[in-house]
Length: 123
Image (cartoon, rainbow, N blue to C red):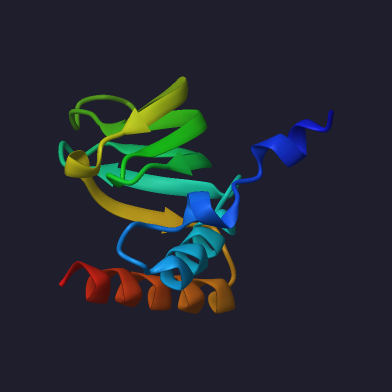
């Protein structure tokens, strides 16, 4: 059996209970474009994580792979920023303050329209 075929969700799995199947499938397609892109995520304690976008769940938690953590150190240190390799990490939605994706201008505009749709759906 082909494992890729089993991993593909059916249209009934992608849809939601409130009947907004078209909106959800569009959102899933937009987020799918981010897969395996370099992403820089800032968190509330001032650290930044640079890694490859792996997935996001319904709650907005992000999983990055091959991640490097960057954090500020004291000014007396030879380097103002420390870094360390972490591998696969989960960044909770509640801690996230910023999120930047390495992509073209056209893709950035497309992502902005996705953010507007999500804001409209949540209100």
